[in-house]
Image (cartoon, rainbow, N blue to C red; front, side, top):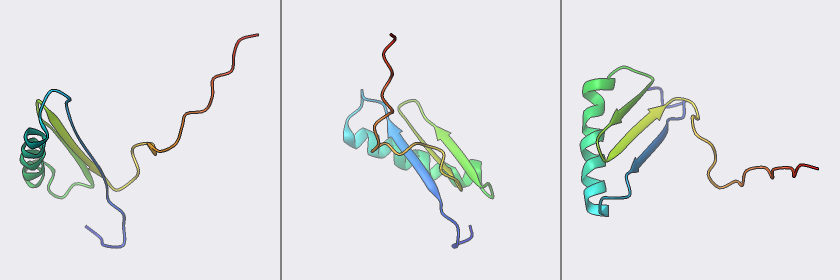
Length: 74
């Protein structure tokens, strides 16, 4: 990994698990990145209740912005 580049990541859990179960699931998923994604510029590990993803480019929208308004039909 080149320190001059940005690394973007996204991690999430399903709503049906507790925060501690989520934390454990994400730790487990992160521990698998070296095995399945070594040397890659991006990767994803998907578990039953969580997933993690990383890339060298922005692959998700800024969640802080509202979508543009939908025009009403005339």
